[in-house]
Structure formats: structure tokens, C-alpha cells
Amino acid sequence: MKPALNSTLPSAGDLTPIGQILRVVAGVLLLTASAKIQIPFWPVPMTLQVAAVMAIAAAYGMRLGSATVIGYMVAGAAGLPVFAGTPEKGIGVAYMIGGTGGYLMGFVIATILVGWVADHLRKLFLVPAMLMGLAAIYVFGLGWLMQFVPADKVLAYGFTPFIAGDLVKVALAAVLVIGLPVGLMQKFRGAQPDA
Image (cartoon, rainbow, N blue to C red; front, side, top):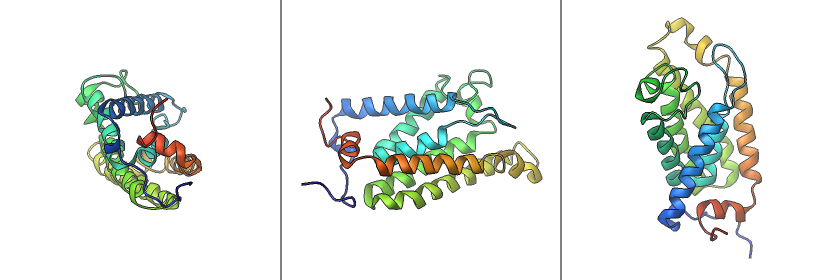
């Protein structure tokens, strides 16, 4: 019998520790790749991180998704060049407390929000959850950016050039995850044994 679209998917707790670690590592690698794929833009290059964060949160759920994004932050804090513009623009904690630090914190909050919805509600609720997650990324990002640029320039530097692209990225992540077969979602979550 096919599970209903609104049925609760298994959580990361159903995975073995090795299964959890492998999924976190795969997610960190995906986030790193999404940070390195850059589309030239001003004032900073645009990356695919927002799409990757939303897709990981929706596919993995709150617990495993959060572990993945936090693992990504830990890798960056340890000095690995996982973030956009690293190592050219600095590495480690120094990079994280720079102008983009708030956006990184927003990734964690967005992952918790979208992951919780993925764990508890129907797939169609992922679209508004991802939009709320994007709003959280911008709230934290712009709030932090205000330490580095004049208040009247914050939107021009940290919001206006990126919002249209980020909305497209959210739409792509939503279509991808909502379109995934339930069986594949269960595999991501550990309900089906890895082959």
C-alpha cells in the first residue's frame, strides 16, 4: 500500500548512526558545492545555497537537516573553505562574523522551520514554509549586515539584488522536493535500507 502524501515520514532517529553521518556528510558536500557555484552578480556573486538549504531541510526533516547545516557551519568554523568566496575572502570564524554571518545563522533557522513542516505537515505546506524560511534568512542576514554598512544601504546591498533570484531558488527547491516520490523521501529519511 502506498503511503499517503500527508503521512508522517520517518525521522533521522530511524537511521543507524553511520546512516546519519553519511547523510550529513553528503548534505555538507552539497551545501559546499552550492556555495561554490557562483553566478556573477553585484555586489557579491549569487550562489545556489538557498536552494540547497531548503531542499536539504525538506528532504531530511528538522533533526537531520539541522545537523547537516550545523555540520556545514562547524566545517566552516574549523577553517575548511566551504563558504562562498572562501578562501579568497577569509576562512573560519573570521569569515563567519563578517558581513554574511547573519545569513549563515538564517540558514540554521530556515532549516529548523522547513524541516519541522516537512516532518509534521503535508508536502504542500513546504511552499509557505520555505518562504518563511527565506524571510528568516533575510531578517538575520540584514540585521547582521547593519553592523557593516550604513542603514540606508542595507536593502540595496543585502536584499534588493538577491530577492528575485532567491524566490526562484525557493520555487526550484519546492518543485524538486514536492515532486520526489514518497519512496525516495523515505530513503533520504532512512525508512528504506541503503542499497
